[in-house]
Length: 118
Image (cartoon, rainbow, N blue to C red; front, side, top):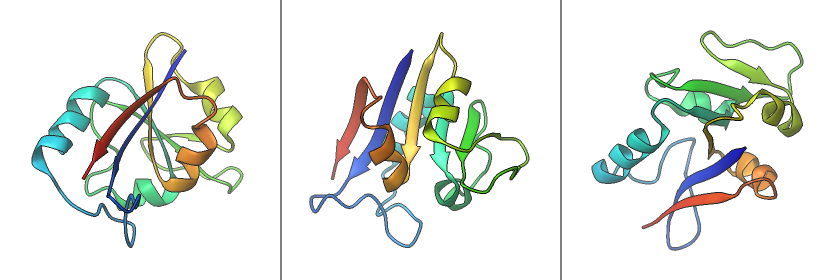
């Protein structure tokens, strides 16, 4: 199974502020779309609700939450990292898209990193 982290990081290692990206760089957003299109994307609930358009189209959106039984329309739900991994597509690349806590928890499982440094 391919688990990839995709993240943009500032020079001070920040990845966001106030539940938003630190910047909106068109080329980087296009790269994100091209890489993740047609794949699983996995995120925490805060990241999901920070998306301007949700769920992200042409992708299987999976949201990890600590609220048992919580449902979000158009999304697969997971209640732990292990639960998320069980639900991922074993035949495709699965992308971890944030936020910080989710990145940290998936780091031991990830076998690829797409990193943009700004």
